[in-house]
Length: 75
Image (cartoon, rainbow, N blue to C red; front, side, top):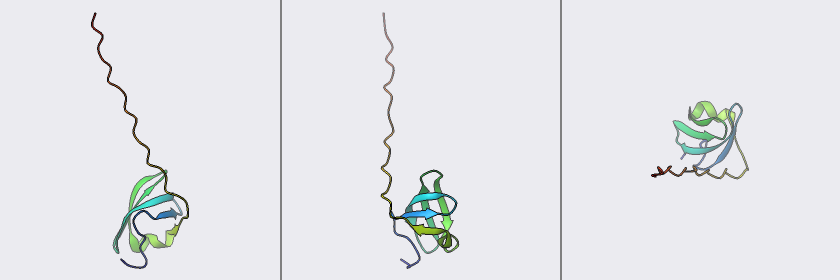
């Protein structure tokens, strides 16, 4: 992996999109899941100037809450 790419799971901060987690990274593309803006894909060479490492802990994944199915009441 090139020295100018971030490893998977790295915490980064983007000038426009804020804090996020690197999902995948290569010489050509980088995919980041931002806390407030969702998943974004970038051309690595173009976005590297806008990214900086963040020392925060990754956010805990939220588990989806399931609602119980309503059971019909028979009389």
